[in-house]
Length: 251
Ligand SMILES: O=C(O)CCC(=O)C(=O)O
Image 1 (cartoon, rainbow, N blue to C red):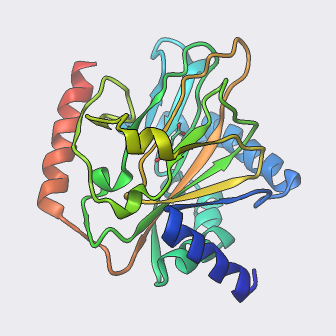
Image 2: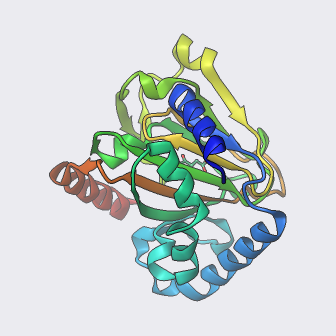
């Protein structure tokens, strides 16, 4: 990736709070990634911490909706995230060295895949400064019918909104007053093809619809990077994680 291209990405990112990079991975690379996701599911889930994967319907393993920390369980996913072309983009957008915090998998199973509530990732990260990005890579076609990602343009420049509890497993917090005139006016949907990459700032407001299709999944990878200047508020984070664990026990 040449210097000039990375500079132009950074300037869009600073202005809009996100970038969209069509065809970031080739179809061959996406196929390889999809095969490794399937291998991971078969080999690693039995040994994973229960807090690192969720089903939409816990009685049906075909409804796997989310996995976290794949890079901690499997070298393929570590190599995907560290010293990789994903990391190079994160570094260029944040303009500093970065550390990969997690590699995730997101699916919305047909008919029952729920909406992703409107939120800002920085609310979960608890960072000062908010120097972090989330990457979302389409593993298959995503559109309005199966729940593509939507961003509120420029929202990263307007601070942290108030969040409150949701009943959505994996996305426990949402913006309580989402839907202001500004949100509606500036929201843009990003239909994506396999291999397309979306990257957003930790303060960018985003959400995704439900999967209303009868027979299409909506699979994607997520990669989160923090800039080295971003410091975590550890006490607040621990309190928050304990709260989540308690709530998960009740489900
Ligand atoms: O996959 C989705 O529906 C949304 C993912 C998301 O909100 C995120 O990566 O922060």
